[in-house]
Length: 441
Image (tube, rainbow, N blue to C red; front, side, top):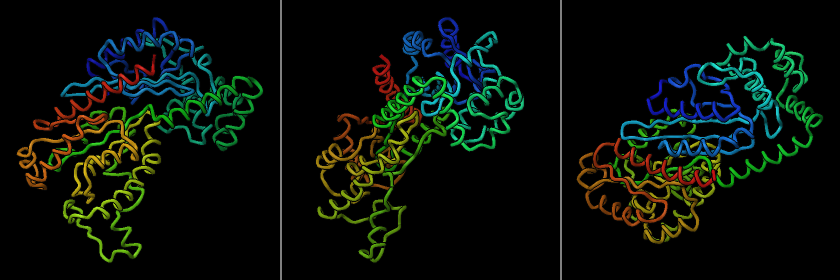
């Protein structure tokens, strides 16, 4: 895709820094850079020592340029930065992946030094030759039991019969040709690679596996790379439009790297449906286009609903949210537990906001960012008449109760959705940047 002036400068500045100070090369999809990027990310192979040398200068360059590091992944085999800058009209976003080798679970298949021994220069950047481009993808995909991507078939046609490629495939997998390797199972190939590492570099293999486990477990437990966003607000506040526009803005990197949920993780069915299936309830109201149709429930019924849905939030968070945010991905909720606090008629949980807020703090896993999207009663009524003025005021009062508490951000969507999206993305980018700068020190 063609780049804006900001992105062209950002790419040029980073490549310029690497040209001066780094032993690196771009792995693939480099032909149009910096004016055109044909991939969602820029993959760079670099030695660990070289990355350590340029790290401080790299982070300083990004920080001083006004770009924000919105996600930062540190795994055993790569360092990843997703950088962004936002205006009201547009969000520039780009992902840099710095690979130290091609490896699987700490088992090395090809080192950075092997790749860089044959790097070339095109006048702007260093890049890997065709053999190296093929081997990087092929060795990794076959070791995990996958096929070589069809979209790179041209690279395969050029490289698969080259002596360098056949030698490497035989060395790592014990196969005499790429065609023979294609027929082997991933389990067979990874065991061959493990045996090769045991014979040639046993201590490095042990360290590689330990470091893989350390970074994998750390990223999973801390969920420190991706992030989650919840949107809450009265009907007519523009949530759907704002969410759609936000996802469109971040699509160049997160288009296929995000998950979207409505209200809750939904590991368990609607409470009414479950009660009906269990024979406790004879009829179920499925008039879902009227979310505020239910009558007021008593305290006992409200507590029962709260307990049921809380289990879904707790278990669902670890299964559906944390499993995604442990890597550079985004989870978006159109409503989350915050909606139970703000809109009791929808959930039919009629308990005080203070009690529900305390309950959330004690039991419900928190999303990274909770956006309280709203507008004045007159603006909302002009857009949608799902609620009356009193109902809107009740929700807005609860939004005002939450907005000054940690982790919540009130956003007024009074003018254009672009303005609201810009405010949200600027807020999230700045907060993520602060967190990631601390991690990078």
